[in-house]
Length: 506
Image (cartoon, rainbow, N blue to C red; front, side, top):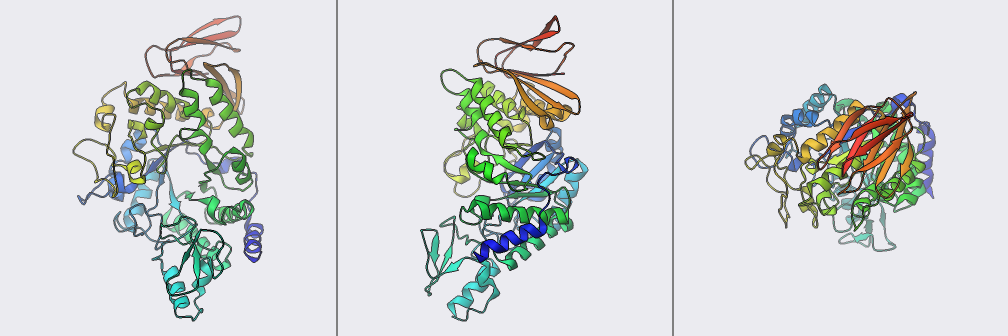
């Protein structure tokens, strides 16, 4: 009870308004997730680093990505770095803090916002806080302030506890076997540490926000307490840097996600759009693609979205199988393209996992999902430790850049239309027509509107009528062959879409 009261008190003291101001909404529509370890090596040690990412910023900007989410960059004994040993430093494998500051400045100079992964649910067992607490317990002094930083108990309930050697004590570890003891996020001292951490990164280093890892585990799946803690973190960030962007990892279904939307966090990753069971993949696979599944998924997601908040749809990330495998598209680039188009036509901030723009493959063990970025055969990092399957189904970046019909150039076109037409990302959505093969959406904001027409049929042209005259095609995304065409009669515009065709009209 005391733990919950501390969290609720913090939320009440710091809570920002639930309806965020319009001008505080993030202005980056196209986000790019980077695993620094596997992205670009600058010093020849085989491990990606900050200076390597700097070498690729022109590529990232040219692709139309206006935000970067960096997987954890803090010191850690693991290659993935989700078990942090120092929340206010960077791992020397990736470079120095000055290197990272320069990287943030270089991103900002190109109009790219930066968020970093912030795993607050736990630390490494090698974190000084945990080491201090363990030493005090093992010596039976119990005088370390760090004991309260973690969830120690002599009466564990359930299987999420680990025995502390040489004692009768246990510590909570939601991610068992990972050497990641859970922090006590109900502790006022821990919350003060978090305030210091987010203030450091936002004001001293200059990042623009955070991806909040594992928010559903903050208080062992107690949604109300998790939401209260999220409110407190959001308030801390707004106090340090107004307009900072938070996106939470709540790996849950639509109904539970609705409960997390009661917090003031800007976005939550739209897991219902992602993976094999997500509405994008389900609308494309099977004997007959069904556009109605896509439309229903979009409607369900938007129905839960509070005013002033932003969807964060994606197809895959570092924890899931790569989208090429999910889509069964190793030899079907048109399906991979169309799926990227469907993702890009969603409202909100779209997230793309590095390498998805070139059709990288990966599934099974986590390292397989985090392979080296395929720039070309002579310029790649070493593979992360533990890789059990190495596969690249599509050509490298250099080859795809030179091919106008490549998946890369299709993704670039999708990003560009989102930048050219902000209504796609920020407009209010309505469905004008849906059947098994066709979806017609309208996006409106401040008296402007655009239309998005999509043909899910992979072997036939489809037509759809738009109740408006004088329209022009501002983007024609071609996954196979052919182009969208228009005809007009009596104030109605008919658009004819090629197979897997997407047209944006104004």
